[in-house]
Length: 128
Image (cartoon, rainbow, N blue to C red):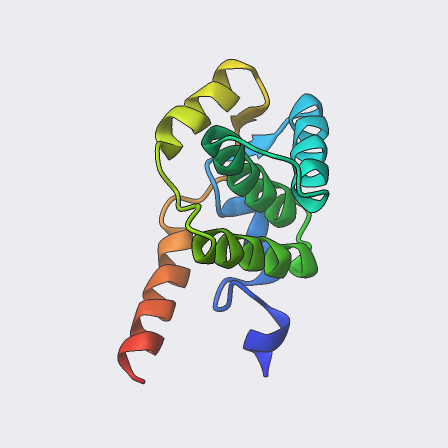
């Protein structure tokens, strides 16, 4: 089944880089790797760091068309939610990433593309 191989179905994998309004810079990639390492090692992280990890993870995975990393990002989000570490104050975390030039505007961004995925998921959930 296509959905098992494509975590953001019905978005085509080649369209992943168009999904989000920002992309990582080289410094953003280094910061993402640091956050990811700290998370994997179980180090204490602030709410802001968890927010940034969520954001940077999806930007990283989709920019690289890496389905296994998108699945890992989805799993991370579910795991954090299950641990009570929900998304809050995301706007400020994103603004900080922009201010520090860890993310920049994505020139390939296609407005509304991600909505196609969320509508698919919503319809799928409503049909169950």
